[in-house]
Amino acid sequence: MPDLFVDEVFDKNDLIENILPKGEYENCIFKNCDFSNADFSEYIFEECEFISCNLSLVKLTKTAFRNIKFKDCKMTGVHFENCNPFGLFIGFENCSLNYASFYQLKLKKIIFKNSQLQEVDFVACDLSGAVFENCDLTKAVFENTILEKVDFRTSFNYSIDPGINKIKKAKFSLSGIAGLLDKYDIEIED
Image (cartoon, rainbow, N blue to C red; front, side, top):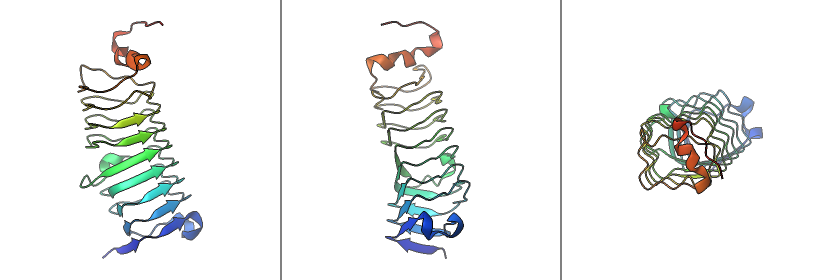
């Protein structure tokens, strides 16, 4: 039976060699922790917050993230598609998620705020109702992705092909419309 941790705060100084004991974490806060390359396989996180943590290349095989907030975190190359999809609900603010993958995940109403999402894989995701607020989506991949009612109005550098994605009622700024026409290799001027 895994250990249960409830209402605890974990700071970088609390963890010996930054190793988090395998278990279930409920309503916990993780601050300034370096979990890069850690193996969180089969861990359960519920109602938790990660603040100013490095989670780059963390392994998430069957990891449960239920109502989790990531703020000011570095999460380069994280493969979220390996998470347990049951109850998966996550949000990001001021995070660097470059080279991360959300392949085939259902992430309805997810919020990405002020985040770097360069070369992120959103292939075959359901992002219905998601908000991308002030995010850099350079070379992010959207293919067979459900983007219905997604708000891209303040984000930039995206390239989305309306022919291979569902974008009904998605919101874009006038300056961002060029990102919907990239495949045509045309020049748009003000």
